[in-house]
Length: 256
Image 1 (tube, one colour):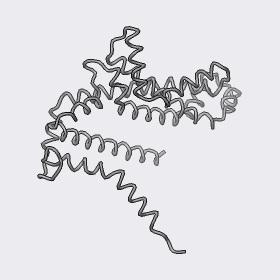
Image 2 (image 1 turned 45 degrees about the vertical axis):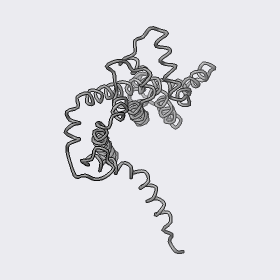
Image 3 (image 1 turned 60 degrees about the vertical axis):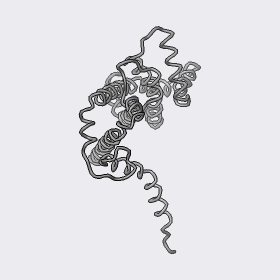
Image 4 (image 1 turned 90 degrees about the vertical axis):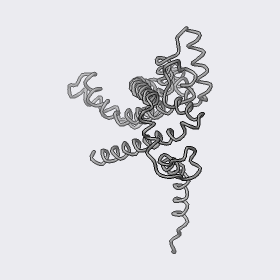
């Protein structure tokens, strides 16, 4: 039977369609043209301006602080929620499951408006704390679902075996349950980190003065033509960082 080249052509076309915009963005980050419509020569000028833009790096630091802390909190709360949903059956757990699933299907704009209304009603001033609470709220659901999938394949007789061998309940959880669930917990944490660092809509509603995250900063920079090339430079650095993290993760998985 003659081998068909159609699947390879379609695959290459899809890859080109997905990554061509990123290639254009990277090229324009070195383009002397302010608008990127045509090539006017190679330059490092936009990276130099980006390096001197203190407000951008401040926004990046705020974004990383929120993403890391919200991901850690979501990992702990999501793991506990997944364990409770998997081990117990009652009407209360049905309500619990509905509340966990709700942020997954609720539009971001509706969730942002509802959280803002809650903060205004309770008199909480919008700022770093309200952004953190909002991010934990929607990251929690994703971590719970990932860990819940891991628990569905977990053999709880291993805990009984550990107890029979003399381990206490706490030690069995620490030595058996936690290590076996750790890959799912880390996967959920990475997903939560990605969603948190990339969120714009919900953060837009619950942010306050002095708490501008990187997506909000980029959105404001896009309104002025002078800042457009700096966005290309910043995006190129983020793409390079993501690529390095992916390569390190792949090599680490091979070693393990």
